[in-house]
Length: 163
Image 1 (cartoon, rainbow, N blue to C red):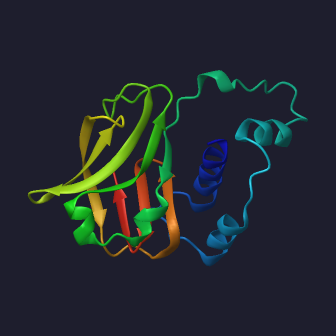
Image 2: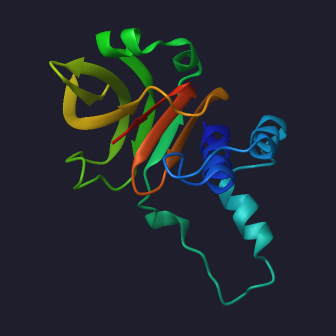
């Protein structure tokens, strides 16, 4: 599980905002080769070990962690419209924007009428939904990625979903 979080953090730094920036072949190569050397707390603490005044506190993290599904790379827009799980999301402190309490959620996309939506499930039931933007002509990537910036975005093959 920690490897997913560490990989996600690296992807966020390497890729930036998927909606606003093209993914370069060099960034893809870095992500493909990267192997985590511990959990993110160890990596960050080691990187800034010379800064004794920093005193990082990892007990009150408030970020959204988005984890892509390996299977989502094979979904077409038609399949997405019918409803597909594209990944998971962990919110340690909850989200007022998404109206979700702290926890882990399965992220499912589907089309309702003429609108795209993302549904959040706690594994047993749907606990929330929000309108989404789906782009069917996004830059193709060789494997599914998830990016958290101003929005949460999942990208695979040639599509991108943001909410």
